[in-house]
Length: 169
Ligand SMILES: [Zn+2]
Ligand SMILES: [Zn+2]
Ligand SMILES: [Zn+2]
Figure (cartoon, rainbow, N blue to C red):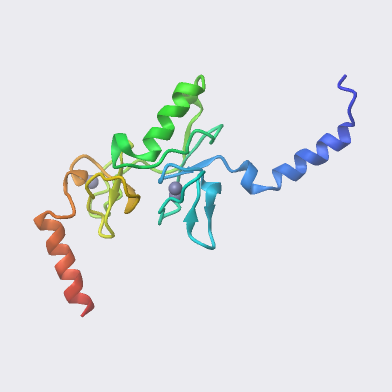
């Protein structure tokens, strides 16, 4: 029907199937395609900028990763994962129905672990929330409502930091 060599198509398909970069439809918690992470240099390079992703933690799988290219300017509404998700929803019909969650939606504060909705938060290395800002920094984590209300300069966070410094010295 197509006037093409079916064997040739088969071998192209097989070659593509063997190429994980092309087939990888996973999205990292940083909000970018997992395949854009260089596992050797530790850099996530979604398009024209580098993302400071430190986790390389795939969280969902989508049909089309191309809209996950936003830059994070903070947690929640300003986070690249949320912005990419909303851009995909606008552009792709039935996007919501086609998304597969590959991570458990529970608070990633290991003292908590409560089930929670997806709310990516930029945190310091102790898991405490950073204030929103344009510079791309911090660690991306999914935190519940209670845990994400505690900022890095809170008494609790300061105490944890001090205790840790003492333990190291
Ligand atoms: Zn990432
Ligand atoms: Zn990234
Ligand atoms: Zn929590």
